[in-house]
Image 1 (cartoon, helix red, strand yellow):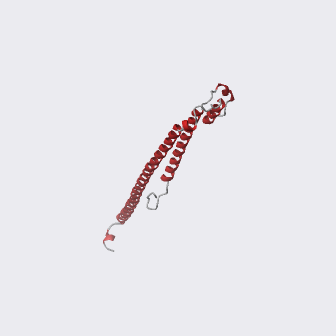
Image 2: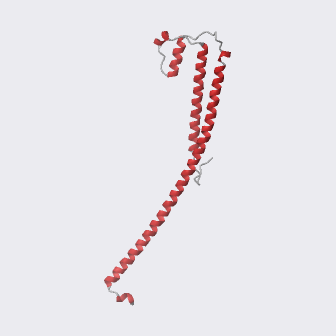
Image 3: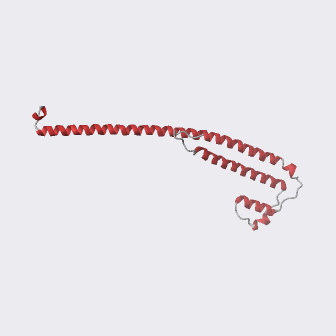
Length: 170
């Protein structure tokens, strides 16, 4: 039987067990290295995808903020122009608005029901002051609307789905 038959049986069994353990260990290490390589590659891929998304979000933020700032500037300029025009459209000798107008206006601004008990204490409102207040309120409302539109635009821009290569769509 050759050289292998000269070795006593317990040593042959020990040799076969050690050889089998070596093969299992080598296979285990090879498999672990393969899994680790796949893990590392996926981690790098995810990091690159995250970087692309962050870059796209930063670009969208700059674009949306620039547009928002321009729109709010226009709203404020329009409000200031309208305020300067009050003397042209609402003469100073116009009759004052009744005290109830102030009570209702303040209630509408605060979102609370009008308090009839406040009516006798309220003062009449000069027409020009009322016009200035309305212009200021509408300008603030338009600025808020522009801000909301900018936030919605930012959310839309930054949540666009990624393509198959992981790049954010433009």
